[in-house]
Length: 364
Ligand SMILES: [Zn+2]
Picture 1 (cartoon, protein in one colour):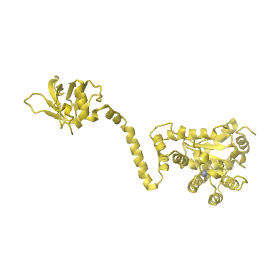
Picture 2 (cartoon, rainbow, N blue to C red; picture 1 turned 90 degrees about the vertical axis):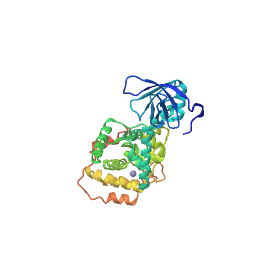
Picture 3 (cartoon, helix red, strand yellow; picture 1 turned 135 degrees about the horizontal axis):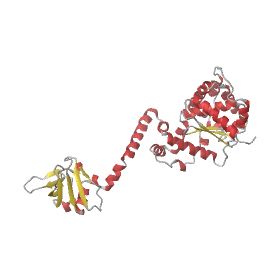
Picture 4 (cartoon, rainbow, N blue to C red; picture 1 turned 120 degrees about the vertical axis):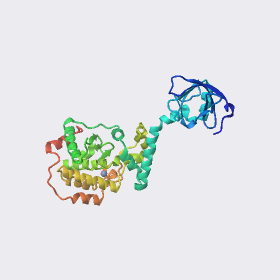
């Protein structure tokens, strides 16, 4: 270590206590290449406290008027050096004792958490090449719920949500039944927005958005159940979270992971612009078929709805916001749903409940 020349070999008066006896003694200290040299008597060899082993009672600032120093090499012993000059000089020899070093240290748990998460994400990325999905799986529930609320709000912007009491109760009962079959403990939350679009979206945090257009276009309750089960499949696979992280970027997602908030408020992303991959659709369908079977609801509703959607005049994949653009329907998907072996099933809703659900927006 190079010594700042203006104080090399300068002696400071100090009080030293070895921590074993009650009294303290007057000593001289010097800042040397090896550490603080503590000189008790001129005849004794100085005792050296290496800089790296030092701690101070308070971080050394430019305004420090004294320094109370301890050393891990001599537990219990303390060295008190009055005057601002020693404190300033010590700060130069042992920068880890300064206030800025202290700030850095207090930031450490957060930094380590971030570094660890990024390392894990990179590690898995190298195996799976899907950091967005990895992060999505690691997001705390609270962050997912926050993301979900923001997305639902963004999608409902300028449109009413539909909450006619009877229809709402019917929808909640059906959602709870499907959630239970999906093994989602706290259940999904379904919001109906008053839009003409025919679409359904899973959003982060086990939220699902249905449009009035979709409910009106359905030929029966089994179709709604099928669509809900499919969206639950996306939710279970964390597809919405993954999609959002891809959209907002990994850095913003890392902030969410480490509890930093507010990032999403500046992101005008909505799931309207998403288009799920063929693989993602396949996964969601697999979950849907399982959930429907568990719920004793026929898969023919789902198959029928998809078949009809893909044939509706004027409802093309290019229509941004409609079901075909977000959940591309392929021949394979249709075939898989249609080819489900029949099992014991009952209608998802009775006639009265189905009418109530259709009137959830109060328009009919
Ligand atoms: Zn889908």
